[in-house]
Length: 74
Image (cartoon, rainbow, N blue to C red; front, side, top):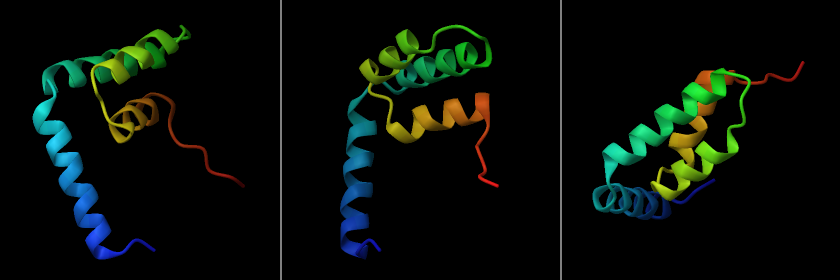
């Protein structure tokens, strides 16, 4: 369980990060990652590009979830 003050600090840091980066570049990189993930091509170069564009782990994960779905253990 995360303490409420820790959660607020993390949200503030995330907001600061997103305010300082080029959001268009991060969104474009995640969109390109999503498109390549739908194909059978190598995602690694576009994954690296998304990281360089300062996309968050959540944004990158969402792009991949949209393309590949989510595994549910049986």
